[in-house]
Length: 259
Image (cartoon, rainbow, N blue to C red; front, side, top):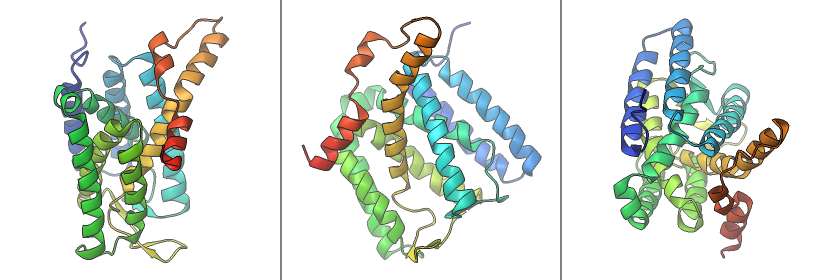
């Protein structure tokens, strides 16, 4: 059976956008058992999308899911900076992070974004900064907390080696946050707990978190695949061309140092 998403990055993006919008709309009318069902469907959808992914991309997606879920537990369940509708961590959230990452990756591979990479990153930068300014001046909740994320994301958009992915993820996270909050799936506290810092609902710079998810994915995926290959008897699971992928730690250092 042929894979409808093979060599079709825009089709992947449209599919992820559609199922995300549908899933959050359904979450609004279901209880916790319904959330469990939506979570199972989300894992299946992630599996379908990953069929056409490379081994490295699959491992990167897994790393993003693990790291992002840890942040979810800390940020929502423990810290309470944002609260889901049933005061839990819905089962669709972990695979949802994987879909967000894949959306950003595939959007970067589309024909238009590939042909206009610099323009795309600049548009994202303007969008990030614009949202930050609106959050401080117009929106009901003064978004000082979001401004921190705006600065971080803005720096990586200007200096990061994976700026195209960050720009694409920002586009999707902006939709996801505004839509999710409007649906009541989650809400951000007006004051970041324990800090006294006012925060937006949603914060303007929330997509900055994916910078660190991506850094973890890029840094850890090849190493984990190498370890897995050795455990299986020395099989090399990392394609040769991925040796040229920029090391995430080096990318971070170059951003901080301004080189």
